[in-house]
Length: 233
Image (cartoon, rainbow, N blue to C red; front, side, top):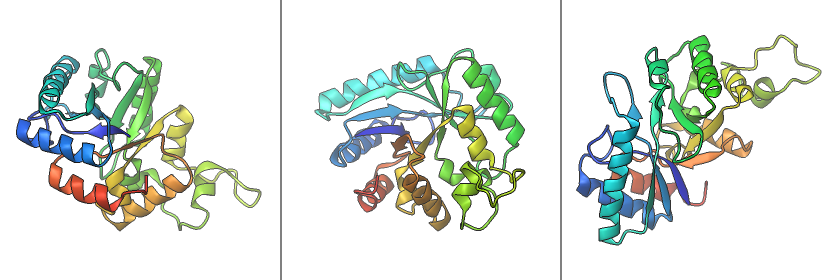
């Protein structure tokens, strides 16, 4: 299995604090069946000012430690880019998933400007990258505030009974722009609450996710939700 979203690098963001914790998390992921991990520390202006070169160096150093410890986990560089007003400045030098052209991005959790989000996505695509939206199930504003009955039809298609002017929702707009979706395994386990779990189950049933990630920050909670969600992803 491949983990497409993980904060395993030590002391670089709000993930693992030191090497010992990184090694412990690596063992948790290996025990759960993962063989490859994309290391995706936050890139948030003024908070986590990580750069591609620093992330690649940190990945190389941790990989050497895993090899010494005999932990069979292959690491690749990545970054989780926060789409705010400073993001455009970072597009000149970004770190996608390894050597791919796929770029992991995250949005504000509570609320965001749809026009700004779509503009950032357009900029990413114009640069030749494919945006991968991290844990879309956690952004309630991506979905229209309507009852669940017929939600998918309102989001991703119209029927004869639906008005042609019915808004499809921001998530549908982003998918139409070419975005891929990365689901959090913890969401399926209820780690972020029932509402997020329902969203994740819905997206999973409809096959919306391209990738899954642990979004692991620390060993103990990761071990618990990976065990709880075993066989679900």
